[in-house]
Image (tube, rainbow, N blue to C red; front, side):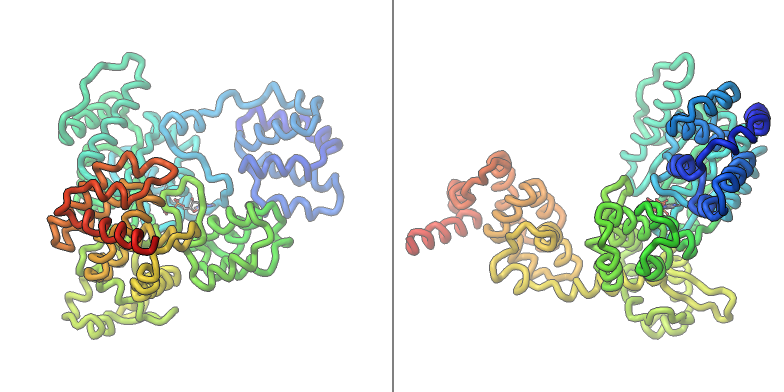
Length: 571
Ligand code: ADP
């Protein structure tokens, strides 16, 4: 807290203690994120209003400028105009941290936020090592463990910015992308940096990745010395190489060993995958606007069931905010591993946990992915030595060790290295995910989903299958089934109606090669491209009619003709 504000609080302390009703004020301060539920509880537990006020002021004096400002705003909102006036003159002038961060595109805190001081401090400590020299700080951990939130939180610190990164903090979300996308990203970053200079130079956009890299190098070295670049969610070391330009970088990733291929000083912080029970409960309490001790008994089980995963607890919290009487229902869903239904509509990149997990697994090389899936045979909470897996996979122990190391580095597997030999285990959620995934793959069958008539209702389950059936079949190597599905006019009609023709065309492009039926594939693709416009109309056109205008040699025509004859005969 800056000096003026502190002295002001001390001067008017007694006045404030006499008059304020802390419980009202604290609600505002919690929603500003300057007070935790914990702190609020501790204060509310004081016997009298006066004691509570004393405690609140005591706490405020230990907080930073944001605390003061939030308290001031709360006074205004609760119509303590006179008191607010007392504090007004000493309001900290600017919020440099906030300005620096928002200019650099650093995301704000999530609406519901709990502090994780042990990790935040750890990241800050590593960032301080970049004060004198460029280098890399890697924040790694499994999907949804809160890496991005943590990275953003770590730089929300006045002293750190002032002492280490006076050149500013610049955030870039990366994710999975290919070279052209990467070039566009770097280009837009350069653009952003140039825009904020007083005299923006007019450069033509770079023509190649190398050119983009050079541009960025120039900007960070000459125009933004001592700035920090935050690269969020990096998957690929080739991406990282584009940023190997002797600058200061904080990156988040699931893959611990990414910085092996770049030069300079390197530091790392591992983020634990789960919050402790108290923090998990705090999230649920904040979402549902409940006091910690007012939470239903299911709350504890929910946190326990997902081992405190910040992502999952928040997903469920957000759902409960909408449907506050569904505690038992969501707990059951979680216990039954119905992840698909636990969805959230916020800005998180993945719809649901299963997709987040899926993405992690997808980037493994094919042969390792299959091996990883085999891990679904492991029992819950059982740790195994590499030998067991060597039997399971029928591979040389050394080979197995390398593979396991890869999984561990990508946060897909955990290792207990206190034990000799080392023991390996999956996070509960990962195991559930694998089991669930294998189960769905085994269950996919045409009988169920197609032969009795394709799924047509609009419910979630059907929509899922209409969207992903081809995908599952392709992955499960059900090529015969895939063949019948994709070359059926009925399927085309249904999927076009529900998902639109573009989705279908995409299926042919993506899975067509597996089927090795070029002629038929091009016939269907052509039909869709030619009639794309009609197929987007509502009411939905008669697909048989449209198909009858295809060349008579086409399979599309043949099926349409059969159906037309069928219609004629049944009247
Ligand atoms: P990661 O980058 O590890 O995949 P994120 O940082 O994107 O994970 O966090 C995933 C989700 O988990 C966030 O959208 C948020 O809802 C929740 N979350 C993470 N950290 C916190 C936190 N400290 N407090 C509250 N929610 C959090």
